Length: 317
Image (cartoon, rainbow, N blue to C red):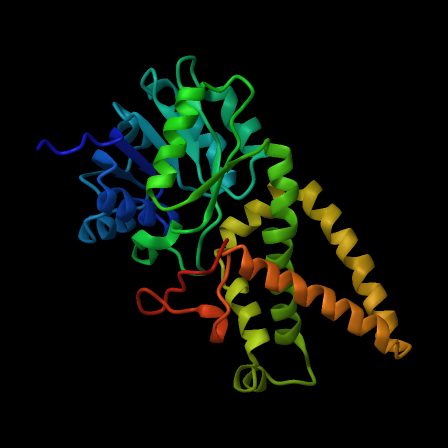
């Protein structure tokens, strides 16, 4: 019996950090491509990717990497997507699918779409999966298993191309949803971007406190604070770009959060135990709903059992 034909003949991975390297592992494990081309500008990173066997061909030049590829994935910070799209656009083959993995979609659409030639299918995407680790060594094949990937196809997107990209992400283990870019950015502002911003701020505040030494912060850190430090250890370049590219939705959610925080502050100041109890009960129910939805497990340490040392397979970006 002949082997099943791969979904794509050639996949070009532009960027080989956590998401790019995890895709390389998943593509290889699932047999989703006849050839994997890995591209990154840094020679030392490309050399490490080759040592890890992440691709079949390795390029520092993005224009060379995308030639002949029927799937091109921009696995780079959202701020870099526009310039890279301008660079590779003339070299994309007719009928190819171009997608990305960025955490914001509105700016990616506005930055990338003008550079996509006719006949190329641009379908923005966002796998909601990640860890605080980065670089080609951080990737692992099961990163996307059971996690959501959101596609934000444009109104004129080819249904067959969208279906093929959906099949790709499903094969990688993802559950796939589609929505418009603006709605995606509002949803992610509250479930991903705001928690990271709060984490960066809390850890920064703890680091700046004069009444508490840094050694005490490290020595006595409870599990809640350690969770914040995990988020605050996320890639600074990526999160700088996220904040700048999704600023309107983030500022809206920060405003709402500030109002709710002020209300909580008043309840504590005035000893309003009933209000505190009601809020904590309501938020506890949200946690249970997340478990029931299969987005987390009800296990010690939040079910964090790493597949490989130092990597948390359940952390989302």
